[in-house]
Image (cartoon, rainbow, N blue to C red; front, side):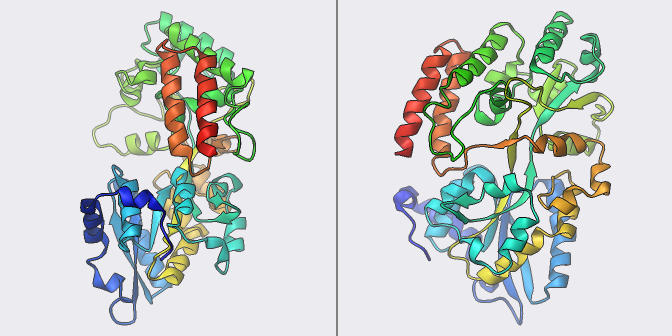
Length: 424
């Protein structure tokens, strides 16, 4: 096992015991399996629908192709997951591999928790088969510590009824058009025109970037001069003015109704969300809101920065103390091939495999084309180990601007100063 930095020492004994109980009780997964099979454990956070496909289709298909390997699936609760993973690695109780949030990959690589996958046979072939932007979220100090198993982004989703009341039949193409539509919707009684989902990076970055803001330089090594550039400050000022004018939905500061309720109750003109908005509501028993017929989909409206959204998704990583790394790699690279990628796409997850994502059958999905198109200009949240700490500062300062407690320049200057201190 690699040396794990002092971060893990802060975890409680109870957390270590909990994770040990989760992963260490299956003897077959730690001693090579029963009989001729090697059992590899896979932690994941798939939804109910996604887990069904994973269990009923992916697992038997993989085990049929690799009869010497048995896949043990463990669904993990998202809350507190990061601490559990760190504790598992520290206590030699982590699984072999895991589907990990893309913003955590470099952070876990830095503390020595993950294996460098670029050293494995066949890595370059896998790397060339997937989209470049999701793949880049696995890069840390010129090595790749994961594979992008699925990707996503957010698009603009409009309530068709309110859009028509605003005098439009198609989604606004520009930020100026969005503002005019929001003003018209507000006059028609809408509770929210521009549905920014919260005062956190995932919520506001599509607007910040599209309005011309930037977080860092291209190498993600400098915040000073970028997050507090005139263009970035103006972007934050613009969003703050929208909020002051009553054009944003209450969701920007955590208000009610929530984005989905506001859309389904014909209260919000527009929200932004990922493909799960459609895949979940389309399969929700008793739901009377026809998400396909009662919404209009569009790209994030373009501003001075173009049409930008944020890349989400999960990476497949192998832990540094995996007991069966070769078998785990066999599964990881298989999971990025066309057939399993297409199977998971049945749930609305967007494949990272280029061939699977461009499969005509996948693109026939009534809501998916806009997401695939938006991915062409979507950006990753800064893929650095310190991102979680820096993001917390940015989020807090952004919220203070929205609440009128700081002006945009002071907030962004402070964020840049603190970010640079953390990087150094």
